[in-house]
Every structure is written in C-alpha cells, then in structure tokens.
Length: 465
Image 1: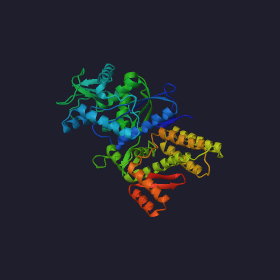
Image 2: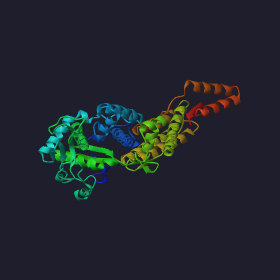
Image 3: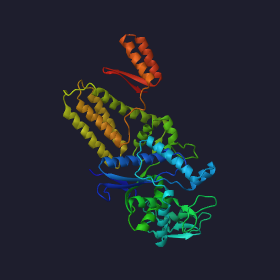
C-alpha cells in the first residue's frame, strides 16, 4: 500500500514518493510567539504531529522542523504594551507553547529554529536574491520582485493579473510594483533591530521560513505544511523566494489544514470568541481536545463547541473503558479457550484497515472509526465465558499501538486518591457484612465525587463520570 497525500500545489491526491527512499524532510510553519496559542494554532500542531507519527509508524525516518517567529510587528506591539523587551516576551510564550502542545500529546520537532538565532542565514539569503536581480533595496527596505518570478501564484492558483486588482502600496513603502513584498524592513525609532548591508532592521515574515527550511533541510524538501490561511501569501511567497534563489523545486507536497469555527462562527478577536488552549486544558483533559481535532479530516473545517468537546470526552472514555476491561479480564484469562486464531486474524484485519484509512491522506476520522470497531470486537470477546491471555494481549497491544500513532493515551485522567480508595474498601466490607444501606450510602457519596462504580465478578472497578 502507498500513502496518498492531497497536494495543494496540484489540487489532487498523489502517491507519496519521498526524495530519498525511507527518509522524509518535513517543515511545518510554527506560531508567532506573542501570546498563548489559540485552538487555531493547536490544530496544525496536532495534525502534523500525527502525520509525523504515522510516517514513523510506516517505517520512515522523519526529519521534522517547525519554527518560531520570535520577532515581528505583533511582538513589538506586545512589548510596547507590556513595557518589556521582545526577547523576554518571546521566551515566555515559547515555553508556554511547549507546555500547551506537550499536554496535547505533541512531540517536539527535531529542530525548533528561531528567527533571531538565524539572522545571518536570512541576510545572506536576501543578499543572493539581490545579486540575482530578484530583489532590490529601497531606503533601507528590501523587496522581492514578484513579477520576475514567472510561476508566482501556482500554489494558490491565482494569476498575477488577478492579484494585481487587490494590491496597493501602503504609506511609507517605496516599491517598484504594488505586488512586491518585503524581505527586510528598516527599523523604526525605538524598535528592535539587527545590522545589515541595508542598515538597521529586521526580516519580513515570509523570508524567515524559506531561509530556515533551506538551512536545516536543504534546497528541496518533501512536505511543507501549515494552516489553510498560510497558502497565500505566506507559502506562495516562500516558493517564489526559494525557487528564485536555488532554481529547484522548494517542496514536493504542500499540506494545509482547514479552519476552525467557534459555535458555527469564524474564530476572531473582534467577535470575542477567541479560545486559548491554555484556558481549555484547565477545564478539560487535553487528550479530549486532541481526540476532538482528529475526529474530523484535517482538510475539512471543524466546528468547536463545549457540547462537541463533551461528545469527544464520552467517545474517548468508551475506548479507554474497553481497554481497561481487557486489562481487568486478563487477570482471570487462561490458555485453554477456543477460537484463538479466529480472533487474532480479526485483530490483524483491523490493523490493515487502520493503515488503509491513514494511507488515504491521513484520514484520522475514519481511523478513529476503526478504533471503535476494535473496541466493539473486544467487547464481544469479553462476553465469552473463557478468554485466552494471548487474545487479550493482542487486543491490548493493538489499542496501545494505534493510540500511540494518533498521539492518544489510554490512561484515565488521574488515579483514585487515598480517600476514595478507602471509601471503596469500606463499601466492599459493608457488602460482605450485608450492610447494604451503608454500601449504598458510600456509592452515592462516590457518585457525588464523580466516581462511578462497577461491580464485576472479578471485583469492584471504577471510572470517572
């Protein structure tokens, strides 16, 4: 089976054939670190972490790079408002980013390059574009000659003539053409700056990713990814800069995840529906948010609401309960039951089905459906009078493997604390002594603490309600 990826560049699914057999070079545009990340930032972090995990699961050696924009207009504005310097704010929110996405089950990239640590690389990149005639200096600013790159618009599927209609020159800009975009910006009074051949200033937004992707992954990479909103102008400009410099294709496959709506409205600060991950994970298991994000195909828009998050919580809990039931039953399983091969083949078939769904442009929504089928079959098996340890182990291993591929965990939010354990033991003793009134009273007390008890032949089990 071959993995198929929907390529924004060609607008069709294509077989994934990396530049080098067995290896994948992947660059994902990271956040601008001037605040806590919102769920719009969380979606690409989760989606492309899952893509990376799946490619690794399929045997690829993935080199994964995701940047931080740690200097730009938003950071400068935040620094002025808070009375702090740009590096201090950037550092604080880089650490906050790691706290949030780690809670969401995202693994760190192999490299997290920062703009401020790659200034020499960026300046050198711009110098070479000027040498080639693709860029020019104008009163301390440097601009890219958009029309000179003949394939401009090929990612967003727009022509230069179409783009010209909405283009304009802002006050203070000295461009040759309204379509030209900034590679370097001259510093304004009081702004953070770096010395360059064109005077004091800082990079434009688009050049940083081109320069860092090339530095860490080479002239051509396999996958370049980010949110749908980055397709134009950010990724379009990256292609123009990179391919103008090297004369080579910048990225073979372009992946873009869909937008997030909040209660059926587009998320925006002006509507007051801006939801921060930092706030969500104070109230909800972060794994529930990850499960919610993966329950919709990454290219489709996703609608966020508290109600839908609760549905995801229940769904994830059902899968975790199946796993816990298997773990519990294993204690009383034997090696004397029948139909072992039949069940092992069913489990193997579900693994193939999971791979088939994920091979189809990383369709996590359908892959999760396979997890529910795995849960269903496990529940059927547990209805048998006698169960085999080998089959139980196979079911549990499958849960663990497929959950790991999706970046999900099977553990419940937290263990019972000592007080609750003592209450359960007290209830068990009351039942032995046939003091059912006390046993019921303790059950009700635990229910108020959001603990639901299940009395099974193997003993009392619990779960959170």
